[in-house]
Length: 253
Image (cartoon, rainbow, N blue to C red):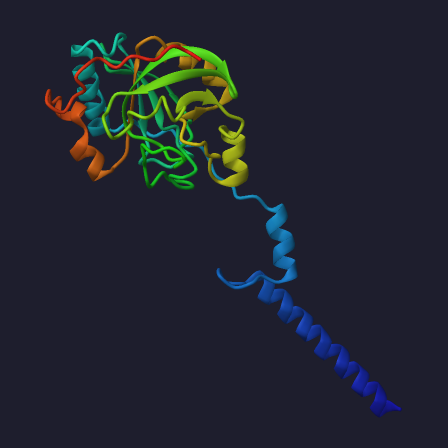
């Protein structure tokens, strides 16, 4: 009888040891390995935490944006001094859209802005001018008419750069508000949500940003992309590479 009791105690100790080992394995599971049940439960309830940053607009990015703006203004394509600058080399958790007064160089506001789902997750890493790519386009745009669309108040964007963003109107690349842009989304998911290529804004700032950019103000979308920097005719203000006529928005649909 004592011998049988001893086996029961040993079995209980061994079972406990295996249970503790399994718990430790679940806690210490390495990336790429299938987590244990305990880890799966935690992953569904614990959300990644991230904060929204307000980086300064880099001087070299502002210089490029002002260069492109001056070129377009000299051709009558840009009609207002307000300029929006987006630096897509920053993560989506940063307030990476700046509204700049080009007469003084003063930053008037700084906001969150989403990129296209085809361009990347936290960072926008690839860019396109093609239909159905769901990627963001770079370069100089001009804001035209405001309308009520699928996402509420929206601003038509005309891409001025041939082969870089000139299909923006056809692709319905517009500025609009989106529920997935905001500090709450960043805190929960560690990044903003993503659009189909549009520069989407937080709903509470959409109306005021669009009002600033409508009817002929410019938007310059930048990334540390060597091909874009080499190809952009507006950065060189090259008459032979620039469009032969001032871009104009087709009639609103």
